[in-house]
Amino acid sequence: MTFFVLVIACVILLCVLAEKFSDKFGMPALILFMFIGMLFGSDGIFKIPFDNFVLAENICAIALIFIMFYGGFNTNWPVAKKVAGKSVLLSTAGVLITALITAFLCNSVLKISPEESFLIGAVLSSTDAASVFAILRKKKLDLMDGTASVLEVESGSNDPVSYMLAIIALGFMLPGGNDSIALTVIKQVFFGVVTGIVLAKLVINILTKTRLVSEGLDTIFIIAVILSCFGINSMIGGNSYLSIYLFGIILGNSRIQNKQNLIPFFDGVTSLAQISIFFLIGLLSFPHLMPAIIPDAVAIVVFLTIIARPVAVFGLLLPFKCSVKQCLLVSWAGLRGASSVVFAIMAVANGISMKQDLYHIVFMVSLFSVSIQGTLLPAVARRLGMVDEKSDVRKTFNDYQEETALQLMRMHIPEGHNWENKRIREVNMPTGSLAIMIKRENETIITKGDTEIFAGDDIILTVPPYEPSEQDKLEEHSITRLDPWCNKAIGELDIPEDMLIAMIVRDDETVIPNGQTVLKENDIIVMYR
Image 1 (cartoon, rainbow, N blue to C red):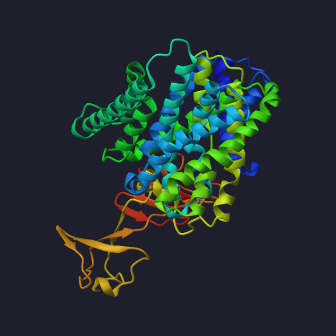
Image 2 (image 1 turned 90 degrees about the vertical axis):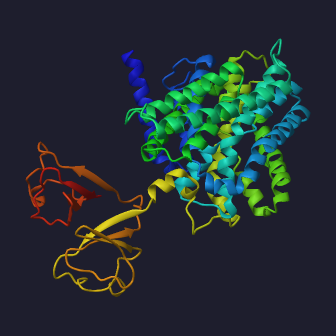
Image 3 (image 1 turned 45 degrees about the vertical axis):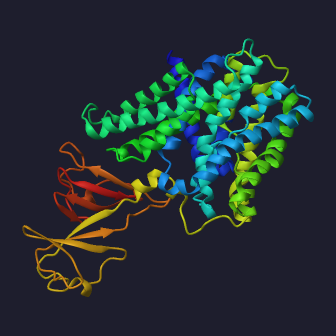
């Protein structure tokens, strides 16, 4: 057991380092997670024997539902709804068209049986939101004409459709297929939508109108509801991924408390889920089997990238008067990734018998897609002139709102201050700031241009938030009685040369320190690195 725990810790640490250094390798970090899995797998250095597709399916399914939830939860619906029509059309009709064209080409060109061809097309018909936006956010690229929002909603919402097609394909291939196609679709959509909406409304009411959930346990509560949503839909035949995605969108765009705490928490959970999925994908693979299926995998990549995806995108977006450049970029950004391989694992775990090595074909297709298309995505966007240098891709996400919320600052005016006895319009405010009110003794004054400023006033200013670059970082540290810095002057402290104590918050005052400033108990110091 101890060895097993150490292996897990080692894997996570390696993946964290891979994320840090992915730019140096010139490829998305998710690919490096797969390579780490291969390193630990049966054909790798550590030779861990693992071919339990049932266990892998259970782990990956749980991981994928958290990715789906956070994809919906972090979608800024007021921004995304402007392109929702295009996105939903791509995630429904686009997925079906992609699957059918891919299946047709697999059958006619590669001579794969119709049933197996349809299953391959079904599991490869969805795109990977995590891969696309990991690249865009890492490179800080926004795309023109609302393309980022189109990709966000499409990539987040097409997994349920791909999953439904995979279920239909399995129904054809497994003995004694259960329901008809029509009944399967109705159950998947109806139960999935109803369950997602009902649970979302229930959770919102509990979190906003009751005190059933203790403070600090809201994240645990939501995890329990996500798992419940998955379990309920699995029991009644609903589409779990559709349900959880809707649940995430509704919850993420509601006014629940502590959303600022939920976003970083689920961002971390999603990162761990992505690491788990891509590591398991690599761990399940047998590289010695791959040379035999490389020709088929390359052919399917060509089918998807050059034919099926562009036909679907151009056919559905041109009627919306989208530019050719936008259609080309959306076509190129159709990366295959985690969900495709998870659905392939599901098919193998259900005991289908195929002449083709479904898992390794989908593995190779996803590997080629993320490594080649993903690596070239920023260059393709720039080449097409689709990069919006004046905007920020984070605006399409809910966490952008949390980071750029209205920020207030109190400024005390002592006697002798150069603003004393002047009018608001006569003083030079800090760039980007605005005086909105004055606190004067027990009086609150809403400021105007001719409002006078007196000694003893507290002016409430709105100020733009500071967004640190990758090279710098601000940290807060609270001084306690037992802290070794307590009651010491800053000049006496042994602090790194690249660290600067920039500000001290003491009671209701802000202190700009120097070397002689003594740190006291309950001080909050702001450090710059």
